[in-house]
Amino acid sequence: MKHIRTQILPSKQRFAKIKAPNELNLKAIAIYVATGFFLDSDTFYKDEVCLLPAHDHTLDEEGYLIESKPWFEWYYEPRQLSFDDAVNEYVTLLKTITKEQFGDSKVILPLSGGLDSRSQALIFKELNNDVQAYSYSFKGGFPEHKISEKVAKACGFKFQKFEIPKGYLWNDIEELAQINGCFSEFTHPRQMAILKDLKAMEGEMSLGHWGDVLFDRGVPEGTQESDIIPLLYKKMVKKDGLALAKSLWETWGLDGEFESYLSQRLEQLLSNIKIDNVSAKVRAFKTSQWAHRWTSTNLSIFEEAHNIHLPYYDNRMCEFICTIPEAYLADRRMQLAHLKTNDALSEITWQDQKPFSIKNYRYNKMPYNLPYRVIDKLKREFNGIIGNPYIQRNFELQFLGDANDQKLRSYLFSKPYLEFIPESIVQSFYDKFKNEDVVRYSHSVSMLLTLSLWHKLFYKTNK
Image (tube, rainbow, N blue to C red; front, side):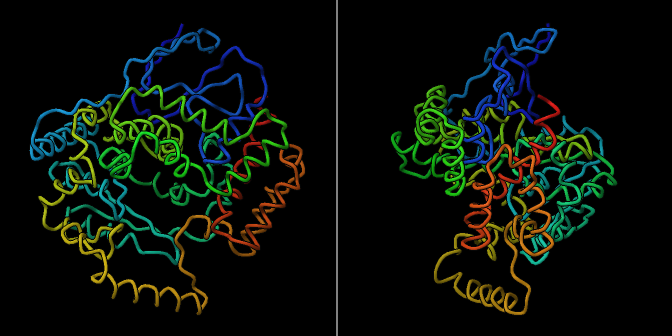
């Protein structure tokens, strides 16, 4: 017998076999296509499951799952404490977890223009670790590394910047597929472009993933219980992903309607979370589903380079969140209060509120932000006219242009793959991407690409 305890928020997906038909789980794949991640314990096959978070699992000697029992269930029991006391507890906990994770080790710290990594930076600024910070920006996109460099300088860290080039993924796409098992679509992991550089650094990595979800509203203010399913549906399901999923559902001859099936699955999963507060309930759902099945998938890329640590994934952080009033978590209040204790860091631009900082972001509204918006738009339009379009999304580097298109087509229209996904469906969504709306249909093309890699590398070899 083998016993496995999974964390409340696992940094790695683990799988087991079950007694079920050795065949494709087409309904699960349809949801994957629509959303970009699998739900709950679903995988590509009916006889394989992903071990659920916060459970004690028992497997037999052959790797078959015998039993799973939850050791933690999400709850909402807010304590009577002041906001200042809550912030102090948060900072103390974050510092304690960080100290335990790193000890005296060298630190590799990815920095962004947001709050999570900046919060980590402030913690490390008060410790004695040797910190190597780095950041990257899209070629032709917003220079996020300029914000990160200022954060690193304010904390006294070494800093290295990288530029993610056009078509960066094609040389490494099959390596990426092996790393993440094709459980995530391929347009997101920018870190794959600098994997060799990361491996050359010394230390262990500190990643700030999921802090932005734990320390914010679960849903917009005023959301009612009856609004949850429509809200999740809107957040999770991409419009072109829905169209692709429905096409596949019909082609595969699956019973019922896809949208009804997905809604039933969401209702079932939500019913397992025994929390009355709507915001806390949705946060728990996002953490047990999104984080586990989407965010955690590509953490494996960082692990290819170094040991990784995630302070916001720590069980104590998750349990702490369950005891904090929603009003304190809303609008990133606790993280902002922490960062405002350092003048230098709080004066640096907050990317989501650019060009404003943590100190003055409340002015990011009309008419105060009008000059920046006008100038920024003029710059982007001018660069577009002279042949340097503004890059905002991963797929723009990966799919656009003749060289990218040739690589993309080589995977989308390979003959073995078209035995799995009909050519008429692939051609239809590819044509819509090329001729109708590249932004709207980028998700469906990315999912078709992901399935092509999965089919090439895993379909025949594993089954």
